[in-house]
Length: 81
Image (cartoon, rainbow, N blue to C red; front, side):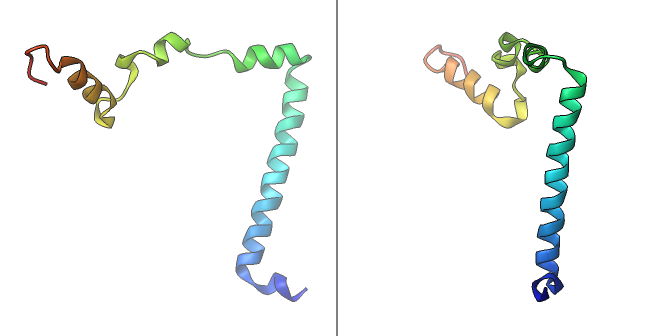
């Protein structure tokens, strides 16, 4: 197996094994923690309400999203952005 002497091939194989183990172990953990598919679905839906995340105030000022939206809303209103 001469191809295993190449470092890039060994790195890829290590990552593939790592990913396969991660997926296998996480699947086993989900099965151990939840007793039904409905319980898994409930756990996936726990979190912030969609109303909060769709709010313009939840956006980061530095990303330009909120500032750009605010400036666009002020166009034609006589206010300086």
